[in-house]
Length: 567
Image (cartoon, rainbow, N blue to C red):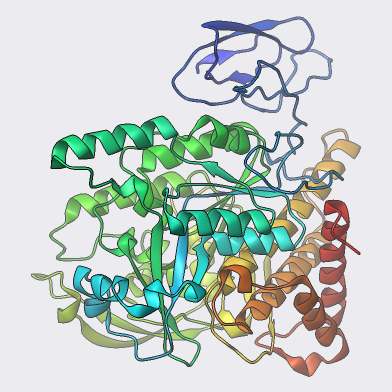
């Protein structure tokens, strides 16, 4: 914090440490002092810039509870990202696993258990997002049927990522209840360890405060695992209803920073996946603290706003201005830290700060815009009333993925290198800050429902982005730091194979009912890729190149082989 190594210009971040003072040897001759701090942040794994011809390396130091030790972490890529893979085989997950070797990705927050309801009419938004309706769902017979339980939220992403061969962990909060036990056991079976977001001491402290306030042992919100009701219309559409929708926000207001166990995971991961729901759960400052730990050690940040994209911008006539001010600050914070944004066309438009795309995104009524130039129903609100019931349909406006994506990349303060536009059955597209544009279609499948499709596809995006960063790093090192970019054709081909794997993974998830353990399996993803190689007519939207399908399958096989999963 304000300290610099005199020889290498390497930033030093204060960290949590058992002794009040610990000395850490800096590469070459210098030394630096680490002072105790309430934040369990590691020494920044920042690329060292020697002032003379000496080869410097970055180091990462974590506060280990069981012993005091230093752990060296590999240097960063020319872009500051540390997403290269090694060949360490991922161990079976358990709460007692020792932290040996880097992680590929950590998901932050949004741990929940889904209750899958039978198909039926989905209420309108005004009826769906109410405490009365949530109570009705909580007390229904379906909520008590364990066979309807499934893990949801970021668990969808984590399970898909683990199945694609990545070493993953989650940093989240679950209560000491049946739903929490179900969630932890399910993730364990999928090889995904859960690291506590809030310490046991904090949970006990909050419980005691609630007991004194209420005069009885009623339990606190931190004792409860988030439960989300998933409603389906039978035609592939779905909606959610949970405590996330009702507040008070954030649900875990007492959490100011992550637990030490979580900090270790964040300090050794190559990527962090954050979705918009985490801001229903945590204060922006807590999210920023977690992201800072990861970025200090070179991790790439992936942000998927999801349906919460529309809550980051204040509606005209809204009387609850404080909430939207806080949400706007949260959006500015995460966009200034992220490397990749993943969103539907409407969601991306809602994040644009100004312009026609922003107006359309903020007023979008329903559905997910797909394809190049999708028509979106748009409503305006009465200036004197912020209620959605007074929204007036103003017509249909065409959104273009390229226009929206580049407006978002140019948004003041946005640090993203990629914007990924998810277009459902039409496929997906990537737009980069330097102007690259790549479009890929999706395999045609019979849809069960679309729950978890975007989460599954996001896992493949993280995997492909990691490979691209690793190749860029090798080129940078081989050229003695003279070449930091891939040739246009090479980059376009690698993005194409990444998108191809992503759309195949999302399509595979769409063939099932529900998400969680029902997300894409490796066998089904490979089968869909094979079908694209053999039959180009089996692809929808922009289509899939047979050659790209082969390369996408090779990307998957390489990941599985490095993880020890490939048979």
